[in-house]
Each structure stands twice: as C-alpha cells, then as structure tokens.
Image 1 (cartoon, rainbow, N blue to C red):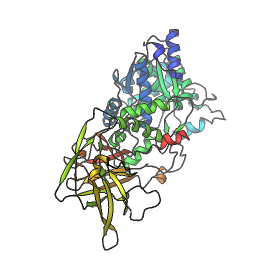
Image 2: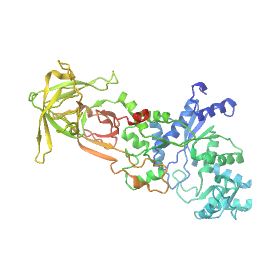
Image 3: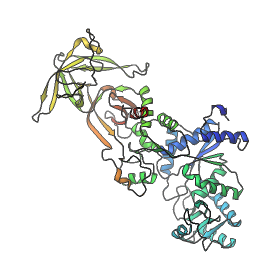
Image 4: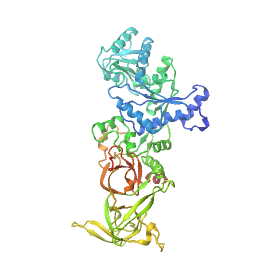
Length: 557
C-alpha cells in the first residue's frame, strides 16, 4: 500500500484506508465491469477513473471484467472498443476477465442454494412475477411455485440447463422474503432461459445469470476488496451481501458513488444505440456523441477528461454538472500545448492597393505564446489576403473595432491597414475590400506609437489552402437529458448541432499535421484533425471547443 497520507480524502478512499488499517483487507483489488453492448461514454469514464485510480493510489490492481450475461446485445466489437478506450483514457488493467468465465461456477453455486432451500424454480410469467412482487408500499405475494421440493427444483433447473424449455417458461429465483421492504430482496431472479448465441460461449448455455447473481459472485471469485458501483446499486447492496453470506465465500465491500450527469448530455446507452441504429448520428464515433470514441475524434484529450472528473469529485448525491466545466478543462490544457494557426472560415478578399504588385514577404509567427520552446513558423504576406467576412462592415455600430471604411486595424504578425473603399456585386453585396497599409507598422510597431484596438487574423491569397471545417453545437436542446421519464429523446434533437464549412481557407502551416493533432485556430477555438475523413492534402478539422470561457465567467458571478 502507498502512504495513506498521500491518498485523497474522499469518502471512498477514506473507507478503504479504514479497511486496510483494520486488517479486513491486506491489498486493494478493484475491477471495472462494463457490459459489452455498446461504446462507452463520458459517464463510464468516471467509473474507470475511480476504479483504476483507486487501485493506483493504494498500490493495488484493477481488472477489466466484461459483464457479458446478455448475449442478445453483446459482441466482440464492443469488447475490443472498450479495451481500446480504457487504454486511451490512460489506464492499464491487471487482466481481462469475463463473467462468462464463471458460468459453470455460478451454476454450481445456484445448485448449492437450491439444495440449501434458498432458491427455487418459478413458472410464473414475467408479467405475473412483476405483479406478485408488490410495490414499495405494498408487500409482495409468494409464488404458487415457491414451495416446490428441493428435488423438483433440482430437476427443473437441470432441465432448464439442458435446453428442454422455451424462453420465458421458467426462472430460478432466490428464496428470501416477499414482504421485505427492499423490493430487490423479494425473491429476485437469478437465471432466465434465453436460447441465444453468446459471443464467447457460443451455444453451450441457454440459461444466463442475471446481473445481481453474477456481479457479487464474480467479485468474490476475483477476490475484489472494494466493489465500486454507481449510486443506483445502493439498494442492491443488501442482496449483494445476502448472496455472498449464503455461499460463505470471499466477501468484498461494495461502495456506491454518484453517477456523472452533465447538462445537455444523454448517458443512456440504449438511447445512444438508437441514435446510431436510426442513423440520426453518423456512428458511435460521431463527434457530437458523448462516447469516448466520439469525444476523441472531436479533439477532447484524456488529460482534460481526467482533470474534469477530478473537479467534479465524488458524493452520495446525484448532481447535474455544467457541460462548460469540461470545455474549461480542455481549454486549460490546449492553451498550453496547441499550435496556433490562422484559418478564415468565411473569406472576403482584401486588396492592399499600395502594396507592391508581385511582392511577397515572410513573417516569423510564434507557434504558441504560452510555450517558449514551441518556436516559430513562416507566414507569407502579399498584396491580396483574405479576412473573415464578419470582420468587416460598411455600417459599423458604436465601439466596432474591426474593419470598416476609414477604419484602421492590425493584421496579426503583419501591418496596420486602413479600409479605403469596397467593391460590390450586382446584388449590392460586398465582394472585395480595398485598403492601404502602413509600411512602418510591420509587426505592430509604429514610429508614432499609435495603437489600434482591432487585430484580425488573415491568410495570404497566393498560398491559401482550402480546408473543410466542422463546427459543432450541443446535440440536444434540453438541459436535463437524464430525467426524461416518458418523453421521447428525439423531440429534443438540435437540428443545428453540426455545421460543415466547405469554403474555409487556411495558411499552409495548418496543413500536414497528423490525424488527431489538436490546433488553435486564432479567434475561432480549438480544432482537431479528423481521424476518419482526412486525406493527404485534404484535411478535415473538427472544432473541439470555442475560445470563450463561459463556464469560468459564470462561476465568478
């Protein structure tokens, strides 16, 4: 164990420190148990960060265990994807294991409980079982099959295992107490019949354990010391303990924490799968998705995600976290490391009429003002350049500090320019801005020391490179996408969640970066070279987040 003084003081780590001091456990062993039925998302990242992080803090180990007890939704694609995403987040497991590794042991233990009179085969339908269970305020009723003899139960359970019965005909239930105040203790189902091909065991089994039966016993087999679970499993802990006590096996300590709920973010894997299957999004790696795969493609980094989780912290109360906090953490990192480049998303040409025809010069532009070791890059300048259309108006409002007729601005790295006149097309739209430059203002310095308030980014028309840029907004219009109840999540889709800009122009220095590289487009935000659609000489950029720090501003109010 590492020095306990160096371990964080959240309630989970405090409990672990106490357990180690008391001698209940001599070593910390955790596990993270995803179901391989989809790609994992930012909500899962909290469980990964916690289970793997705790093992690291205490000098223990964490297993990656796949809870593969539902064969109709699980496959190897998701297994490989989850392994990849856990590694990407920065963690390495002690070993990979599967609940299906323990199917025979779980079956044998179920037989043990039948022999002890603590489990029985029930032949009620699913609807009848639900009706017999009662409600939180009303006790349940015993099934008419609850008093079958041990011999009858063993016979039926073995025949279930042998495949003699159709799906839904029988289930195996624990015999506890149908009047228990905790509904989870009212004879929970342990096994159901399901004739389905399993991604690892094939057709060897046609009965599959429920999560409640497989979870705690898998923890026990692996000698897990602390089973870290979401808060929704707090009411399941008495059942977790009951099964382990009945079997008399290794007994881990289950500890629950609050789930990660983020504004404008949907965490339901079932609903996210529907988005993919209905082609509402482009796949699990769509940059608008909260999956780790989608977030990586958009440009979020493992470091920023972990920093975000540290700031969110742990509690026993469900809270809604402002999505702006994640962007704040991402900006904090990328501001220090991302190279700067100039890209004009909506170009309008500026002709500098007093700049010599055919002349071109080069400026040394710093790659990152926050990093003295980042060096510089050459940026060329000539008579014709492009600026953002939004950086010009011929009818400026008060305190407008960009370009307008008679107005002077500074071109980043280059000169001061003053708009002299404009050229319009037949419809009256401005298609070209004419300007003059001050040759004494190179690099923003002037002999008379004058300053201007507006600084514009630009690209040299002679060397500008066409690029595709994708701007993303929230996928949802509703702030709380967690507590939807019976509402249809499709009703809250944001039709403006993705905008593709095809006419953007970039300086040559923005081209040639490897897919996945993160850059700052000056005055636009942080962007990532798309890993899927980028081709040699034809980069596609995804905006990760804007430069505006709305979360920090809100936090100060």
